[in-house]
Image 1 (tube, rainbow, N blue to C red):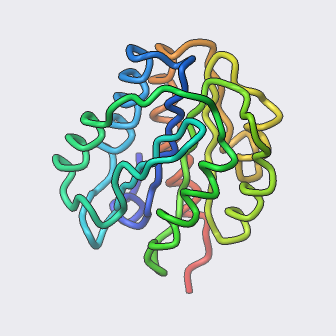
Image 2: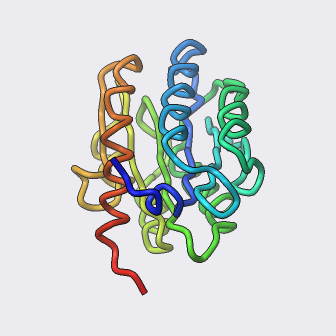
Image 3: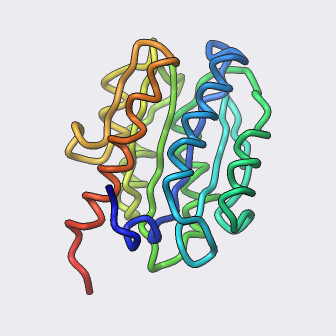
Length: 194
């Protein structure tokens, strides 16, 4: 589906909603979804690197881009993320990820942020999302159940149809794994090379 180069050239940060509405079982489903995306990439210090932030009202860096350098380590780290539970401040989470994750991205890597949320945010997402876009972050917004479409569209990089996905229930997330990977690659192949 993707050329090897495409799978090698990104810093992908997952921004994971750990709010109370998600629940432990669904949170595990989200982590499996993240594992399924991660497994498609070549993971190493010089290839694709993965980072993760979980958020409620607060934010927690689960692991940065430089923490795990093999696919096995990354997959294990994702599976070990403990569900937090709390409110939903998606805007603050995007700002936090910009400061604590993407600020440490390598210049030659594409910066890809994948936000996964099941509810409306208590804070503004537009300003943090616009700032991230301006800093070269390509943002994907994945909404489940009660997630607000207007917010997800603000988070997603244009065109929305390539970067915004919505499912009614957590168990349907898996349907978009292939599409997201394909879009990440298509985008890579259409970008001009220096």
